[in-house]
Length: 506
Image (cartoon, rainbow, N blue to C red):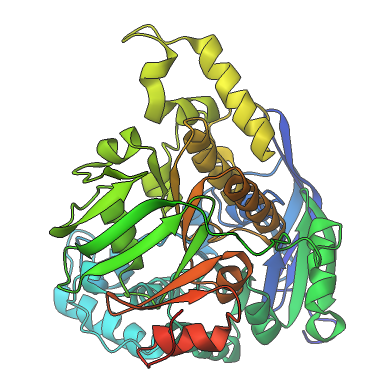
């Protein structure tokens, strides 16, 4: 920032209250043009609420927002767009049934055509120029449904640029990207900085923050803890600011070497739709069996087949020694096999429903005969799981959509734990969750394994795989490349197999 020049963006004294919750209290944030400001904090710290206020989706109860030193009122998303503020959400907001050009100018068609007359040629030409700027070599007429997550991210950035955005908020932008796609995104961020655009970068990935950010602002419990230049901090200091305590020794709970138990899930020659390669493995009682692999390696598809979402083409499975061949998720649930999916918002929860309703939903029949739901029994079960998992919610009657990502994940776990699982499948259990919530999820996972529950854990986080797995199944191009024992487990050994190279399995 030039000395004496006003901030591009200054938010000061921002306070926002919801029924039973103070989401933000006297929060301040400043951003310069051509700067990357990392915004960090645990889930529930207030980051999303602050960005909703910046994006015009929420109005603060108190506080002031200035652009270039002048006060503004962001009373709608349209007004925020008009003033050059664009939010790129973690869950990308694109219309898959439309092509790239239509998505870029959706709601802003007047930029390339007069009212009521959409000039398709001009639309494609303008979209092509924006695609070139973000380095996406795809035709403007390409359907968005055919793009990878990284390519969709570039379309979102192009969409922001089409609105002449001066401030771009990126919320967990690499959560679904490959390494190569992430590196491309980082290069684009560098170009946006050079063009004078201010970027607010929300991420729980410390290495990204230390690589990209010029300054780091930390929120905790709805308050501004501090803002530091990148060269002033270490990852340990940032974590301490975020959670108010040292997590170094509690991030991964200590786990003793596991004594082999009886097999609970046995998979023999299973062929998953979309591949002709059979998969075989055994998961033991009380074991956390990790599944590692690159994006597209087939891990999620395998889990969905085990859960009955996509029935197997051939092969066999047993659960606790009994034949197991689910044709739908209900079959799996009836056998005590449960899935916490990667996309918890779309596939794991009913967001408009309450915490209590989400927990009771998969086992609704146990709360009374049809049409006569025992609300008291539902309340007791929900309160027991909220207490067990230390879910942060004003009450069990809070709508799940209003909870943070980490607490939403706890609701997903709670609904299954209320039903005494034999096999619990966790697909990316800590995706988009802050370090404090991660530590809690890990402790719960270890406790569940100690109770004899078998856990299948799919994760793209190498530290998570190394820290939590008793054994690791490594997949590459929908093939099982090896099963590695915990003793002597290394990142290099896993990476060797997940990239298709040969290595020793145990």
